[in-house]
Image (tube, rainbow over all chains, first blue to last red; front, side):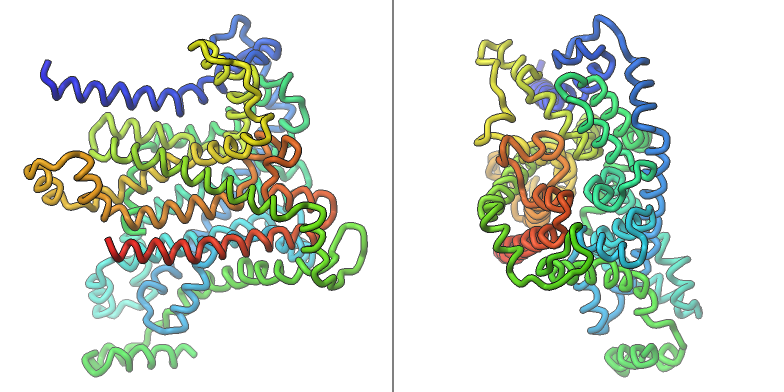
Length: 277
Length: 309
């Protein structure tokens, strides 16, 4: 029993207490109450259910909120938007990092203003109305790409600036075109920041509620967060916490499930990308 | 234009560039940035500019045409919606979120700095709230803070008063919703601080330790200077991000009690939902102006401090 062992144990106990209070209790409360009947969930305590309503709750919410459709919509919006953002952002970031022309510098600063200044959604509604895309999923995708492109370019350009030039110069000495150099030399080197950007942007886009609220009216096109809002604001929270929490679990589950498998890579990726970003 | 670009960059590199390399025709840089620039111009700059115009119109659900209405929207905001109060609420929310987020993240980062197995586990745990949708996070905390929720139950269990209507208190509600915003993001900013801490040279820490410096001394004089860029990033992003907050408030209080948590973005949604589109544009224009007014001096000030330390 040396002092170092005691100090180390005390540290772990303190961290555990904080983790339980900040993460454990909130998550447990949600999960356990999604297993309870309406009456029992109204008490909002963290004890185990005396009467299990797991199947009943999940079946009810699955049907009421049209969960599978919402999941499909969220996958579509997130998949297309994030794919487009990475495909558009990566070559632009490399160009901004390497070009020394003043025009490109001005364009870069224009592009990254959006890191701080959020894109207002009301004029997007106006624009989408003019081109007949208001209420469509394409409209939402366009808004999402516009709202996140700055962050993508900012993160990736910061990383690309730190890449060694020697390999690129060697490739161009060997007669490779810039496009070729980009695909075979630069892209592989950029994979760490691609992963970081992918994680950060996926989390933001998947969870976005503000954009869909304005741009999607048809329930058939609703993403998961929009479905959660429709369900939760439609029923009285005080009497139906079991349904609200069941829906919270179902909406959060896809990202949490991916996280459970790729947790180490995600945490390491965000940390690694942040050093250069 | 492309040839011009190449020539310019070639001439700037001067005569040291081998002639063979200069002659080889290469796609110029702007081609690679073209798609990105188009997206930025059409889907970011254009809407931003358009918002500045629409805010001064009578665009609404109730009339077919749109015409300029001067400062009418701003006047309505000031007179009917007590704009100054909304601006104050938005700032209080953003400050609370930023303080809670960084106040949790910095100690956590210092505690989890070393890359041990246990620390990696805790880093992963504290990152979980980042994955929740803000809307879901709002419902979770609405449950915890409800009159018969877990917080009151816990307080009652330790003998304190357990019948507080937390979110129904107009003076308290805005701080609580802001704190939940800070809670949701603290795991992310913890990772940023950890990333900054790994840039502190090991020799520097060792030297300080062999000199017998206290933990506080090492933090203040060895680690803090290396944390400066992370401070700039985290404080700016939390503040600015929280100024356009919406989801958490909608889930927890819906803007109430009364209008005690109706920050500008909640107001925008209310106005838009009621069909006053021009007015909603003006409200988000106020957010834009606020963000510029806060972010620009903040970044400049923090950058200057970075240079000094």
